[in-house]
Image 1 (spheres, protein in one colour):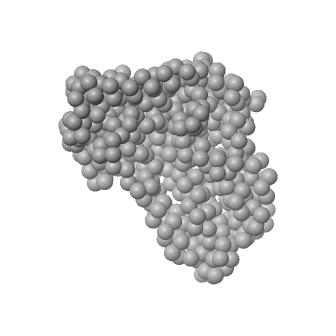
Image 2 (cartoon, helix red, strand yellow; image 1 turned 135 degrees about the horizontal axis):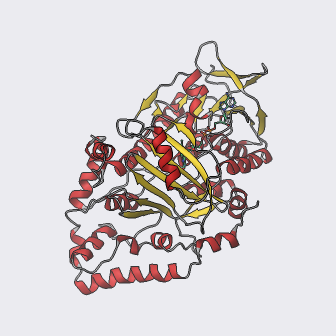
Image 3 (tube, protein in one colour; image 1 turned 180 degrees about the horizontal axis):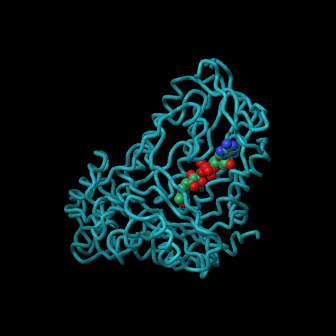
Length: 496
Ligand code: FAD
């Protein structure tokens, strides 16, 4: 492969969420100057899950110029203010990881220190009472704020989302080819991919290939032979059953995550139906038992047969190799707990556009891309492991093993730092900000031993005034928000 070869022909292999997000963003930014083709096979289909998102998707849509109401109506979407973790710390004990800011930080110390001091003196209520998104979620309310400061994401119908993005991408010049990829041809020197060979024998040549072929990873794992790093020593889950049900009540503005003895169950409310599933560790439960537990715990009538999806938690060692960039499941998969997979697709696309190799693929760009991606994923991996490691549950072998496992040194340090001092520091460019770590660490059962001295400087009256002022503002703003279901019906009713 010639490193000075200009990149004009982009070929995207696969048309799931990853393929169409890539096609939409690339066509929107490069559609006038580059040739963009996407190959997908209806017969093979998509993974069909991945319906809960995080707030970064709102920004992605803004960058692309996607209209929120149009997108939500097309994908039957609802709003998501966070995730409700049920029975994760202990059976029957719930908490919410919301997308908002809690309280107001001081420049020397985060709000949690003032809250802890308030708690010690009997002046503070639940941590979530000081966060608008948290309270609104608890009360099933939603409303956009005038200053646009509400932290929210969406629940969406994954198949409808791919169709919506397809129309968008085609409008900006992307071309779709419906076919099965039979083989992948490499350049004679083995350094990159030359063409996709379709089952009709047609060759689709390109300068840059984006592998969005899902777990098959035909280009990155297959043709380029990039190894998979297996993280199942920390992330035990390796299978899931997904099933759709009809809605039995108004859609709540949060994803439900309910812990089981050997995994957990999700509930993702859309306008027209609910997406449900169990994620399980086959070392601890027979898949048939996991399937039965799912069916016994769903509300509403099952609209589909439960579908089994197998995975190995982990990541390919490099996400860009030669002229192949892997996105989505083709690049790896941790597990669905914090809905980070679609976010990682989006990060990969934005990073690719920032390092776009129009004048030829420079190894320094490839190395930078891979280093940034590895850092991104490692911090997300630690955040996900945290949910399993820090728990009071010891009632089944799964939870006992999770609580006693050795975790990466980076995570061990963060847990110890919070336990001993109440401090959390966000790493550069890290996805989850301090308040996410704090909510999950408190929610999973860590109460720090100390707080920052800044909190001691406030007398009782001042501290009470400070805490009550925030709680009252949150309460008043939430009270003005309508019921979530009613707001969605007015804002972007689903197009049948
Ligand atoms: P796929 O959807 O599998 O698409 C692969 C594409 O490649 C398809 O179009 C297929 O036809 C095509 N293809 C494959 N082989 C060939 C071939 N030979 N020829 C032609 N075409 C081919 N993410 C989130 O962000 N939030 C969530 O809530 C969430 N929940 C999840 C739950 C589970 C159980 C799992 C497994 C994943 C979840 N994810 C979630 C991840 C999310 O589903 C994926 O990141 C997302 O759907 C992108 O998938 P994809 O496009 O990479 O792969």
